Image 1 (cartoon, one colour):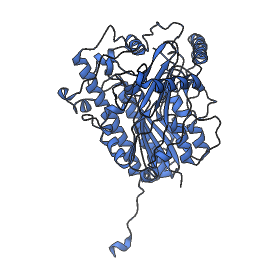
Image 2 (cartoon, rainbow, N blue to C red):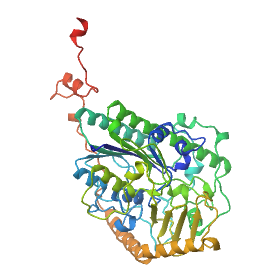
Image 3 (cartoon, rainbow, N blue to C red):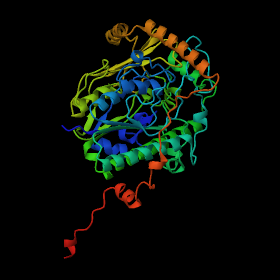
Image 4 (cartoon, rainbow, N blue to C red):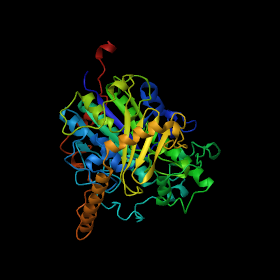
Length: 506
């Protein structure tokens, strides 16, 4: 098969439960719906670490965060770690990134041949947590409840400006690929919505009414990590009232519809440029959003609304249907390499190719996750999702076992249930075999110390920023003196102008 183009559109903090494409009765996502109707919808897709930077590094590398040291939002993603962008580039793909990827460190490309925008968050070590001082709160970047309490429409925000630029640059490059016959290409279009602050444009806010917004299921279930999260985001002392919760969910739904509109713009560019039929389009997210479920907000949890992500694929070789096999973002690297025709790996991959599932198959796969960042109890938290069960383990917390088929809201912990003793025991033994929690904890703490020392030094004197500066040469844009304007008009018009056949008028 000829190497197809690949376009992956990534949301930030989008839980599939809050999309029309996954069956939500209120949220409007017509473009995601359309992709799902002609492609494969994965109904048990997970992130591998429910926080932005570690999730994205794991997605790029195809490896778990403990193997690459990308533990949190300020951990360096090493330049020597091969990514799927490196592998595809070696196979002849033009690799391009437009938008966010939250790369931390001086390498801001990680295999992408070109990057069209800067990132939206800092690329240095300023946001490093301290596992030796777990009660410390860094208000400059820690979440609190302001995003919930201040939800509402606005004409513009830094997030809107960013996603407008990201989408425009991606659409322009897609058209240029068609003009220059650049193929194959692999592009990531990575947006910041519907990530908090929950502030949408008015036209998306107006898509929804207060009285139709479904409210979260709080229940009475609790666990030590959920209690830590409540403290971490200050929900324990500044809880939202019912009106604030409803407004925040409405705003999130609105921003989800905004993201969906951007999906439509990218797909339309592929269609108008004649490249859609030879392009595999994937829509996913780096993690979800708890959005008030169980009294929790944002992410940093392996509960379903935080850990699950949408994953919809459509294009050549992808059949129409749904897949219930557990998969995760770490599988994307192996999948892309398989699509490209294989590669000699520089490091073992933790995922598997999803091509058989994209073709309509099923397997007994799994989704595995690690969380080693803020609000953790200074110990790593592990997750295994296999079949109908999900197991969450941490050295200092009681284990959690959920039967997601019988209890999709995860309100009943079966870890101590006599009828599930064998299942819980098998998962506990597997966790002990898979991970050395003490070794990971030791490495996380040492890694944090090194980063804090580096950051302390870089804050003194003249700072050299790692933040990406997109190259742009205005002397080569639009119409300039080295080129006749008629040539510019001809070479930037797509489809090209075709002169009428004079015989038509004979």
